[in-house]
Structure formats: C-alpha cells, structure tokens
Length: 632
Ligand SMILES: *[C@@H]1O[C@H](CO)[C@@H](O)[C@H](O)[C@H]1NC(C)=O
Ligand SMILES: *[C@@H]1O[C@H](CO)[C@@H](O)[C@H](O)[C@H]1NC(C)=O
Ligand SMILES: *[C@@H]1O[C@H](CO)[C@@H](O)[C@H](O)[C@H]1NC(C)=O
Ligand SMILES: *[C@@H]1O[C@H](CO)[C@@H](O)[C@H](O)[C@H]1NC(C)=O
Ligand SMILES: *[C@@H]1O[C@H](CO)[C@@H](O)[C@H](O)[C@H]1NC(C)=O
Ligand SMILES: *[C@@H]1O[C@H](CO)[C@@H](O)[C@H](O)[C@H]1NC(C)=O
Image (cartoon, rainbow, N blue to C red; front, side, top):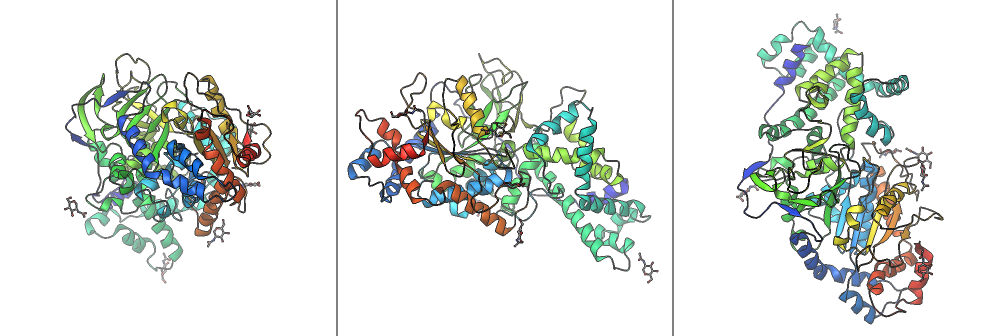
C-alpha cells in the first residue's frame, strides 16, 4: 500500500494559488455596532442606485397596456420609488438553474437591475457567485459553468433526502452507535454505485500486487503508463484502461484542490472541509480562473472591480449562512460586498469584509489580512450541505470492509482529506470541528459588552444557510434597515417529491411572529403554479413608521417540465439545463401571463401609493389585481 502512495505523490506538482495576505491595519475600526442603520457604503450605494435605475421601473410600468398608468402616476413613483429584493432558496443545482431562469426573465422585464438586493443561500448562492464572476451580466450566467461534468468528481450521483444528509452525517461521528436500520440504508447506497468502487478496487489492487512498482519512481516514467504496461502488457483491456484513467482524474481533482488550499494553511489559518468544497465549486464555474497571475478570489475585490457595480446599477448580493457556535440554531449571518456579521439581537456586529480573517480582539485590530473573503469559500459556506455529502460518502467508504474503500480513505488522507484528518471529533477538545466552515480568528472575539457564544470563542462555526430548515434567505431582507417594499421569493426547496409546498416559508413566518412581525401563510392557496402575493395590506412594522414588505412567493412547480430533480443531482445535460431555465422563467412570469404582468405593476408600486396621505389612490384595475392575487 505504501508504494501506491509514492506513485501518487509523484503526481503532485506545484500549483498557483492565492491565500490571505497580511496588510497594514487601517486606523478606523474594523468592527461596527449595528444599532439602527446600514453601513455607510451600503446606504450610499442604495441612494446612488435609486437615481441610476429608477427609469427601469418607469419603463416597465409604461410597457403595461392594460394597467393604463398615467403620467401623474409615473411622477409619483419616480418621487418615491419602491425598493425590491430577491430571495433565492437552497436546493442544489435545481435551485441554481431555476433561479437563473427566474432572474433572466426578471431581467427581460427590466426588473432585475432595478432590484436593490439579491440574497441567496446554498444552491441559490451559486447564482450569486456566478453573477459576481460574470460582472453581474445576467445574460452571461452559466456560460462558463461546466454543468455536464460532475460537481464533485468521483462522487456518484445519488438521491437521498436532505434531512438524512444534514442530520446523519454529523450524528454518526458523535455517537458511533448506528442502528441496524441505518446500516441497511448504507448497504443499498454502496451497492447503488458499484462502478466507482470497482474502479477504485481495480486500481488499488493493481498497485498492490505489483512486484515492480518500487522502481517506477526511479525510472521517472508516467506511473500510469507504466502501470498499464505491467498489468496489461497485451494492451487488450481498453475498458480497463479507461477505468484507470477515470480514477486518475478523480485523484488529480482532489490533489489539485489540496494544492490550492495549502497556501492558506501555510499562512496559519485553520482549514476546514469547506475550503475544499469552495475550491471545487469555483473551479466548476471557471476552470482557469486562477491561472491569471493577477486574479483574485476576494469577494469584496471582485465586486468592487465590476463596472456595473461601480456605477451602482445592480442589486447587492447577500450570501446567507447559519452560525453553529455552542448550541445555536437559526442564527443567521450574512456576507455583503461590504460586511460580514449578523443582525440577530445577540450580536448586531459587523466586520468590514476585506478585513475578514484579521486578528481582532475586543474590537481592536491586532493583525490585518486581505483576501480571506474568498468567493468560493463564502459560497461553500452558504452551501456547506454539500460538505456533508462528501463526509457522508467518505464515511461510507471508511466503514466499508472492502479493501479498496480503506485504500481510498488512506489516499484521501494524503491529501489531507482522510477521515482522521478531516472529521475527528477528537478527545483533544482544542481541535476544531472541521466539517463546519471554520472562521478563525473570530472578528467579534471578546467584543466589549457582548458576552455570549458568538464572542467568547476565537472562532465561528458557520454552516449551510438552510441547515436549520430556514431554506429561504428572507429574514436578511426583511430587516427594517433595508426598507424593502416588495420581496420576490423563489422557493425550490424539497418538501414533497422534491417540490416545495410552502412549509419553508411558513416556518420563517413562525419565526418572524416571535419578533412581532405577522405574516399569514395562506391556507386557501389554489395552486402553487401561480405566484402567491402575501401581505398586500399595508401593515406598520413594530415600533416603526414604515410598512412591512409585500412578499411574492414563487414555488418551483410543474409547468411544462418535471423540474423536481434531486438536490444532489450533480450533472445536467444541455437539454435538462434549458428546460430548468425555462421553468424558472415560467415561474417568475406565471407562464408569461400578460394580465399578471400588468398586475405586477400595481403590486410593485403599492407601497408607494400606500405612503401617500390621501385615500382612494388605486385604479379599479389595480384594486381588481389585489383581489385576484393578494392573500391575507
Ligand atoms: C498476453 O499475451 C500472451 C501471449 O499472447 C499470453 O500468454 C498472456 O497471458 C497475455 N497476458 C495477459 C495479461 O493477458
Ligand atoms: C497584471 O497586473 C500588472 C499591473 O497592474 C499589469 O502590468 C499586467 O499586465 C497584468 N497581467 C495580466 C496577465 O493581466
Ligand atoms: C417528481 O414528481 C413526481 C410527482 O409529481 C414524482 O412521481 C417523482 O418521483 C418526482 N421526482 C423526483 C426526482 O423526486
Ligand atoms: C408540506 O409537506 C410536509 C410534509 O413533507 C407537511 O408536514 C407540511 O404540513 C406541508 N405543509 C404545507 C404548508 O402544506
Ligand atoms: C439528457 O438527459 C435526459 C434525461 O434527463 C435524456 O432523456 C436526454 O436524452 C439527455 N439528452 C442528451 C442530449 O443527452
Ligand atoms: C385588506 O384590506 C381590504 C381593504 O381595506 C380589506 O377588505 C381586507 O379584508 C384586508 N385583508 C386583510 C387580510 O386584512
């Protein structure tokens, strides 16, 4: 077995990579206490954006023949334009593809750039990553995304409920006592991807049985060519050649990830599984992203360098994740292009995003770095449910009695990906749990007068935004500071048969109830194939003078294509992609319904009219729309 490792190590070559690097600390504080306001950069962006993009909305309104708005109306809207936000749920590639179609249709209506925010979590956050890399050009989305290659090489496609991935992957490490039933589940899963295991077994056995491979290194030959010569001298086993080739590709894939992570480790940062996942995902999006010596992965830098962002004409992307310090649940953190932190009452602190990763104690910057805010890492944090997929699979592998699986686990170990290295919940309690995204140092460590699990540890554990069942990034948009008037929600959750049934939104409403924000999830919905408009009637926010936003809830549903693919389906061919995108468009536009489009004009401007002091503001057309589309 050891000799096999030698062969693998020979394949290692130095790779290009960027890591966080030290910079001088600025004189102004890096951590901000969020009392009742957005940070300056965000509020000034929104002000400039309003001027820049309000004509997009006016143009949209003017395009609506049936609604027959007049110039007086346009003037009103122009004076007090509504603020729109977009929330894209999790759901793997399913959500990413539907969401891409959804915002493409919004863009065709002229409403995407008009929106102030787009929040995403898990699969929804992949759209944000794509947007940032594509300089916010909606029509360039997916053009570089390699969708017909596995998202994670060597991980076979499988269908397993999200619930199981989320809860079991970790639990099994905590209590090693696995019920018989679960064992059975495992067995079926192993047997459902025999091919991969056979490949591994074949390759490993080949090496093991060879009397000769010691000399491979010395002879300086391509080890795989050499291998073939030794075992298949007659060159008749073409199928087997192909299999070994596949295996090599898989190993190369993980080796490359490892090389890209190494520099961050060398800088002394704690590495977690999410680092690998982050490199894997951004690599899927743009293969040679890191071969340009001037490239950066820094989310803040990439955004700031985008022309459209500079001219304030695009929505602000917000990545959402959950914090797992202590026994926390449902504690939301967010990454904007400006800040990282949480609006939750137990924290309300934010660190300037370019300086994430700096050593800050009691609010004092001791050592500053840039480039920690890696776009892939942030995306992977929000979608770290896919960590659990890897952990789950490798957990299966390591417990398999088949030698090949043990070997695979050891090979992964070389790359720092083995069970020992990655997942030990150790006796030594100072070790961190690396199946969470580890944010260390914690920028809020020992922050004065905030004493809880978020500030008394030098690290933060972050996980998938949807891990606590809050699969829609709505709460981040509903905070009063952002003053949104309408929020478009796209829900691609998997509730029944990989379609949503509204339960995720209902759950958020229950949570909001605790904060005195009351939305009713309608009981009498006729069909989720149409947008559901919630909270039309103007209700004041608790303790504020402003109104709560209207929520337009769009569920993934059957339109013309069975769009309920598994969350963990990791390859899509072109026709599948096109169909998913089309469904996303149909979901947004209610099957291109022109009457609905006209009504959308009424719904989007409703709060503007609600803010007018006089009664009798709405046209009969709009009143009818509210009747037709608004629930509770
Ligand atoms: C290769 O061919 C020779 C003679 O044709 C045969 O004796 C030998 O068994 C073959 N080797 C393998 C591995 O098939
Ligand atoms: C990298 O940046 C430097 C300085 O800004 C510039 O001169 C050089 O052309 C850039 N290289 C590439 C490959 O873009
Ligand atoms: C998609 O939905 C149909 C029912 O509408 C169901 O029979 C099928 O199993 C679902 N597919 C997946 C992959 O969940
Ligand atoms: C959605 O389906 C789940 C079962 O998966 C069920 O528990 C829940 O009550 C349903 N929610 C709604 C709003 O129908
Ligand atoms: C794409 O996949 C679908 C199955 O979802 C299959 O029916 C179709 O033939 C495939 N198309 C191509 C071009 O491979
Ligand atoms: C919303 O307002 C309309 C008109 O004032 C009223 O008829 C309706 O009952 C209200 N709906 C709710 C759910 O409060």
